[in-house]
Image 1 (cartoon, rainbow, N blue to C red):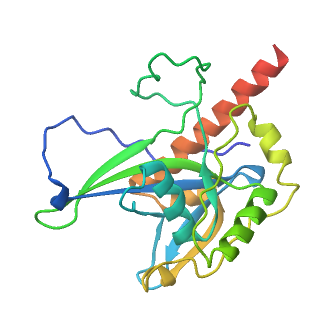
Image 2 (tube, rainbow, N blue to C red):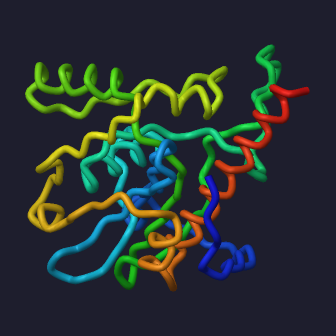
Length: 234
């Protein structure tokens, strides 16, 4: 599972102070969805505007950003997915007085973006790393969604004790399912999605933070695999 990086690393902006009330702030989330067994990542294409992008969008009211990222990933790409815990430098504290063992892997945002929507409205976007679902979970969620008149079904989280090598075995060499007509509006009906190699995805997304989301996610996946392999042989 190797791929060369083809995009330069962007630099984080300096911290600043800004204030936005709820009427002038939109919070969203997006994902780079990896198919671990084939070392590919899902990339979307706007068939009318002719540009490539990772799935993203506004979270629903009352929805947390992580769940919103998974849902938007499904709606815009057609691929069910769940966040993938990875080794990542971050600034979030561990839960206070928790008796759980501290994992070296977390499902935190790898990048955050602040973008103006209008002259008075701000968009805050969090980027996550995710994976396609094992066939059995995919089938179960699809059945439940059908029984619930097409309602979105939140996937179970990635198992805390499962290694990536164990996870890949579950795919049974089957390609992930891409669902049709999952978009929720006329614009999303124009979206196409493809599983691309990491290098090709970075090329398609070149010049955007999304290229580095893919790069960061892929490098973290490779690091996690190496850590797990080292732990197994120790």
